[in-house]
Image (tube, rainbow, N blue to C red; front, side, top):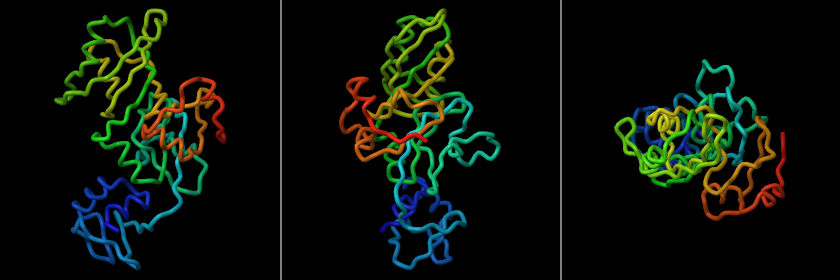
Length: 252
């Protein structure tokens, strides 16, 4: 098995991140620094990443949590008071796929499957993510169209997005926003660009998987194979609210 796949299947990180670690001499095999990206791991090899021994394969765990506001998605933030992983009661160590910033809430997937992490975070796969977004004021149609077409942020031309009006909330506006990439604080920066800052941001969908309306803040569910197919966008099972409510899930 190729070394980057071995590391990914251990749940340590994605294959892309594994390649980076190898390039920076962070991977050792049998006590020696590995620089060969094509190295095939043999039975009995002792693989260490950043000084930690890793093991081949463990049971894959897939979790969808309704992340509360105030919790940090990043596992390695030693200054964070509240981390999403602290809400998970599992003997298996899991990691968030992507992130929701501390002030945002909603659907977040956690797993020890490095391959799925790679698939959902690499830009080439263009998995859609859907958010309910409350912004300050009432943007004009022209400003919204500008965002839909893709603006330039941090020197990068964003892909086209879909922005649908939901409702006016007093003097503010609520939208359903669909994007196909996940740049850092992308939606907040988009609306900052048109001078209508985000007041509340909730992720409700990844691929074709929609977070259940009955899943309370801080609760999570164990995902099944059909859920993973939805996340990957293979088919849409969530046509009606009734279908969503009939889904069987275990709450913690």
